[in-house]
Length: 612
Image (cartoon, rainbow, N blue to C red; front, side):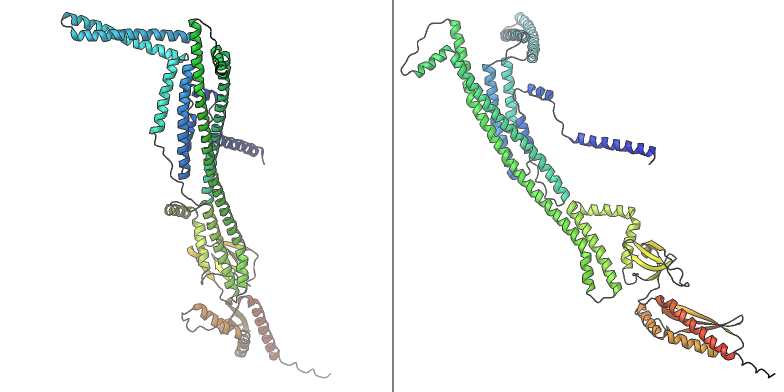
């Protein structure tokens, strides 16, 4: 390989690798980065990802049993979401976020703007009422004051909106957080209550290993998503349980740290005892009351956390049952794939060993050898074609649009594989009664020879030269596409005995009567070809079928013509192709012997030598 070819090969390999890497990379599902996840969680006060996951999984439930589980999962996650919103609202009330200095400034500005808006609104309402009762100049003056108040009120609304946006960007206040929670809760509840879940139609029961592989891949993806959802539910249940235990311990610690709650606990523990109290200031009492309210709010959150953890556990159980249904479907699909593989292997084995079985079966018959070879070739090709079609049917399944598929495939194959199709059809023509068989002597496109192979698309001859030659093979194999049987023509010189005409030529010298020699040579030829002539005449008449071939005779014929130096005798006789050379040699030898005896008789005896 030259250096330029090596460089080109290396470049092509690198490009091929890059293309494959790109296909694999783009085929992966995009994953949200940690920053994007944090940003998405920050925009919503309550994480609604479990609800979205359940709704997406419901979109893959194509069977009644899976749809029932998806509805149960949506019901559980809806109840758990209600409890989470309630817990978030209570937490926002009991534990408001600590505002930064900037947020505190925005909050003061908002309170001032809201107070001013309330004052201007009250003034506008008062002026509206007075204007309705006034008349004349007083009404006009009140109208002017009312317009001025409305203008200030619009300015106040803009100021409130601006301060609200600034406070929201700085972290928001307790009131804003509660309002946002209520809006999100209403939107989520309306989405669950009003949404009409659309389930996909059941997947059609398609045949073919390719379709089964696609179905298994789709079920595997669903199985992965269900596993992730179940793990997320189990993790959420464990997290809620841990949060419950931590909050319970925090409440106990807060009770122990609060003198009033500790004294109340001791009082309740002491049978019939009364707690001794002491006077305190108003500020201390107010702080103690606030502390007790906060602890009471935290205690109300404990059963909420328990119910949420229970819902998550039930949701994990639903996902587990759903996953088991999908796993059962996967096992059924794998079983069908194995059955298809067994069918393919069985067809392949039958195709491999059927030829041997046919040969054994035909070997027990008493058919002609050429008929046996024809049956073997026909059966082998038929079995191979049928086996390939059945294997393709098992692998790809029946086409959905069979008529359109066959039409397009037929048109494409006709144009692209015209020669092969015509050659394939020509094979069937050659296998008919008037076709050719192994061992026949034929002429195709000017080439003569003996047929040594008849394939599905090609015919192979062993060239034997022109028929006027000796007929010995030249050693060259000539291959023809079988399309000649349809588009062209061929000559078959073979009957069942492969008969052909040959000639014996003898030149008789002048000066003597030629008829005794002609009779002797004719008698010799008739004796040598008598048996074969009758057999040839019978077979040639059978080859002609029901058509009368008239006064056909296979007997030797004699032609005479004068030539320079004598008379040329031509004896035309019929012989088998494989015995042609032997019979010609025999007849030539007989003619030479006859001519030799004649010459001996015609030579005069030598005169006696006189005595000395």
